[in-house]
Image 1 (cartoon, rainbow, N blue to C red):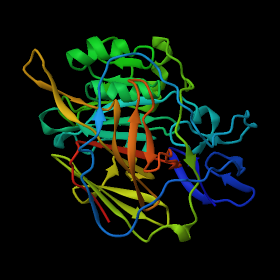
Image 2 (cartoon, rainbow, N blue to C red):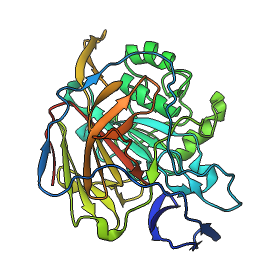
Image 3 (cartoon, one colour):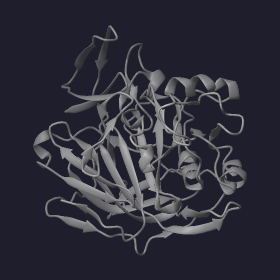
Image 4 (cartoon, rainbow, N blue to C red):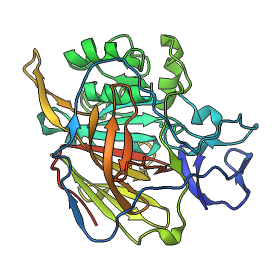
Amino acid sequence: MIRRIWTGHRSVAIAASAIAVVAIAAAGVLLVVKPGGTAQATATATLGATATATLGATATASASVSGSQTTLPSPSDTPTASPAPGELVYADLDGVLAPPNLAHRLPLAISIGDNAVARPQSGFSSASIVYQSYEEYSEDRYLMIFQEGTATDIGGVRSARPYHARWVAEYKALYGHFGGDTKVLNQVIPALSGSLYNMDDLSGGSCPYHRITTRAAPHNAYTSSAALISCLPRLGYPTTFQGVPVRPFVDDSPAADRPASQTVTVPYHTVSVSYQFAPATNEYIRLLNGKKQIDPANNKQVIARNIIVMFQTVSNDYLDSSGIQRINIGNVGSGNAIVFKEGKAITGTWKKTSDTALTRFYDGSGNEIPLVRGEIFIQSVPPGTAVTYK
């Protein structure tokens, strides 16, 4: 059996039998990892020939502004008993084993720009979940969410979007950003005030941010995990996970069950995002325009353990006072999805029942798809986008 274990800023894979004793030299601590409680995936996996997905033509989605919270049953491998001193527990967001103080840390969600001049951005390799979605002017934007991972640099930090706020509310997370459009600042974030912790640099939340000198504004606003965490008490925000529903996770399948390769490509207007499966480590190497993506915060290769493509409507929302046509992403409702994990593709649906409800993923039989433990990259694209995989 393969386990994902936290070490430093991220997780690593180790083999574990009935009881595995792992010595973490850098920390000078002896950690005992106990197996058990592993759920079995029930999803049907499709692999093999090249496929082009243009799903989503009949997807339904709606965007509402409400603070209601929908609590759904949440199957999980996470143990409920209090951990023994020094014992690892499963992190809430990505299911990785980590020290309790990190595994149950308040999630930190940050809007990150993706203009060509903003690349390479920092923080990818330490995030638990990363969203990529459309924005105005045919550009795209990221939302990075951190929990057990610690990033020394996160940026460039950009303005809020309504659809980002609705994703942040799923985790009752801190939302870090530099301002935003009129609707997100005056309507959406206030309506979600019970489900996110706002840290807007332009509205009383400048504590964790700084400007770097190697890039021009507005692409030079940066922060770090340590700065964000240190600023939480100043605004009266909690520092621990708030007990909202989480997704189900499973341990890695045996290496013999994994295919030799898989390549996934998701096109955006200004960048082509690709993933190459590495069966030995059971992870996907992330590439941008055919080149491996390296996180400048630590010079590490950006990898994904799970890739989820959500087909979601993109429509014009309103014309703001500066003449910018704002868009809306229909991320409340349901639509088609493809989940990639362990070199396999599972076609199904995504469902988000309210602004604050957790987005869940289901296979063709209606069973919730458990993810493998580790980094989750969620790619939001319009219906009809030619997502290819082979």
